[in-house]
Each structure stands twice: as structure tokens, then as C-alpha cells.
Length: 480
Image: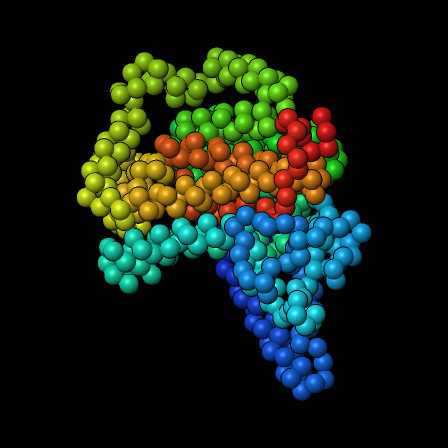
């Protein structure tokens, strides 16, 4: 199911939702079964014929105090780590990207196992669960102040795409080998999407949707396509820069082609905000690997940019108007107008905004795509959108969520428990967050369904309870 979703997420959004709904049903069914088994175990224990609960096959990870996790003593796993695989009643979890000691929670006073429901425990242990909860509370409060309790609950529907994070996290945590398989599928199909997008832009071939100047992939929307390809491109770059791909992709030339196709997707999407985001993310990823890699990456970017300037027409088409007269550029002009209007609305509701579902509709002709829209219904910026709809409390919750994502990704990248492949994946996820954050200053990619469904699916690969390796320059996993 996870691997099928990794393909469907690049297609029109209906396909991703079909697999997500099926995943939610299976997840709920598993939780119900675990609750029934837990209840039966307690009944047996109460009759004096057995232990207090059945030992869970899915044990809590225990390698430290992970960011964003919570819970009392009954939910907190052991903090001991071991390479032997057996310690404090724990059993080794073979993750394929490091060794973690895991243990069934034990009551300290009785010494007996504490009953737990693994499907629900996963939610508790998900490293971004608390930041997401804080953001959800901000959405709810904003809704209440702009329509009462009913609007508060209705506003929560805007968060439905985040469900993929919890379903995927549970799957990756209980079956860690899925991570490498999922990365292979994501990058392989991302390469196919990159090739298709390149054909669309170079030959102006859009047989199934609006004849965009940009590539739109299989989903028909350039901005959504650019956001998705930025996520997979960052994963590809991190694996290339660190050499972490070698343990999973045995054929190096083939992987380099896959990485190039994912990068081509971002390039031919021809979204200037995505270009800027990818530029910054590339330099950040390279810098985090080593200074030498940063210098090489910087030189390659200059060379690639010069070649593209003279050989790919869309580059000058998109860049020259900004250089000559930024205010005359349609895209820039529309953003200045919508940002000014957004600020005016925010000033009337500075603390809680107008509600997550209530962004005003603006008639801005230069921002309208014929046949696609009649009114502009978003602020073309994550910052202005959230500030307008959720006020200061929403913006603070959003910043907390974004910084938490970076922190958890960084911890996974620097964890001594992870092998080169998984550390590179964590670095790529870090880069993906950076790319979307930078692009998000000029686009509302945080609210784009396609981008959320892929971005938070990938974020679910980050595990909780990892400790930072001792800071030692910027040495990548496995040494220089």
C-alpha cells in the first residue's frame, strides 16, 4: 500500500486520496484489533490465568528523547541503546539504517509489561505529532473566533492531508525496510515525472490540460508539480553528494540518470520560486556535507546556469522581465497587489485572522488563468496566507512546525545510529523543507494538496528518539 501510494502521489490527486483512505481504514482496523486483543489479555489477567497483557510485536523505540514525542511513563520507551539487540527486556529492531534497542514498556513498581496499543503508540512517538497538534489548535481557535464551534471543527478539515504523516509513520516504524523501498519508488517515478515534464515544456505539449508555458507533470498544475519535484530532487542530491545511494542503488550510472531526471523536473517546471528554493536547498545540502562539496556544487550551479541561459529559451523568458523591470512583470505585480490586500485584511483581525477557510476572493485579472480560475483565493505566499487567515497565533504555530521539521531532519542526519543511506535521506528531507520554505515566500505551497501529500509522506520517514552525534566540523555519515 505504501509503495502504491508512492506512485499515486504523482498522479491527479484523486489517486493519492484513494490509497490514503484505504491506508486509514487498514490503520483503524489494526488499532481496533489491538484494542480487542488488549481487552482480552486484561480479562485473562483478571482471572489469574495470565499476564496483564500480550507482549506487543511492535515495541517502542528507545534511543533518546525524540523531538515532538510525548506521553507519560506508560508510553515512554527505555532510553538505553545497545548493539547486542537485547537489553532491559528489549529486542533489536533491524531498521536497515542503523541499530536501535527497543523494549516493551515495563511498570517500574511491578516489573510487569504495560499494556499498549502499537497503532496508537506510533502517533504518540511521531516526532512531529506535537508541532502538528499545536498548529491544529491554532486552526481550531481561529475558526472559533470566526464562526463559533461549528466553524472551528469545519476549519479542521483543511488539515486532512496531514493524516498521511501518521499512517506513513506507523508503516515505516513497524516495517523500517519500507523506507529504502519507498525512496527507490519515489525517485524512480519522480524521474518518469521529470521526463514527462521536460517533454511538456520543451515541445509545448500538453495534450491533457491547459497549455502552460511551464511543465505540469501528471497532475496538470505547474506550481504543484514544481513543489513535488523539489522534494524528490533534494532527496536525489543528498544521496549523490554523500554517496549514500550506493547501498540501495547498485548501478551508479543509472542512479545518476534518475537524479538528473528529478532535477530536470524542477528545472522545466519553470517556476521561479521553485528555482530559487532549489538553488538555496542545493547549496545548503552541499554545505552540510562538506566545504569541498559546497564549492563544487557552487561551481556546477554557475556553469549549469550559464549553459541554460543560452540554450533553454524558457530561462530568459522567465528571468529577463524581472531583471529589466520587476514591477512590470505580471507575476510580480499580482503578488504585490495580493500581498497588500492581505495585509489590509490581517490588520482587521491581527490575532486570529479571518479563519483558515475564509481567505477573501480577490478579482485580480493578471493573476487569473483563463479556464482555470475566476478569482484569486490565496495569497501566493505561505506567510501572508497564514497571517491573513490565522493571524499571529497561526503564524507562530506555522513557524514552530517548520522549524521542528528542520530540527528533526537534522537530528536524523547527525544521528550515529543511522547508516549512510538513511542519513542521506534525512539530509535530503532537510533540503526539501528548506526548498519549500524559500519557495513558500512567493507561493502558497503549504496549502497545495499535491505538495502536502508528498512532503508529509516523506517527513514520516524521520524517526524519533535519535541522538545527535558529537559535533565535528561538517563530516558526513561514514567519514569524509
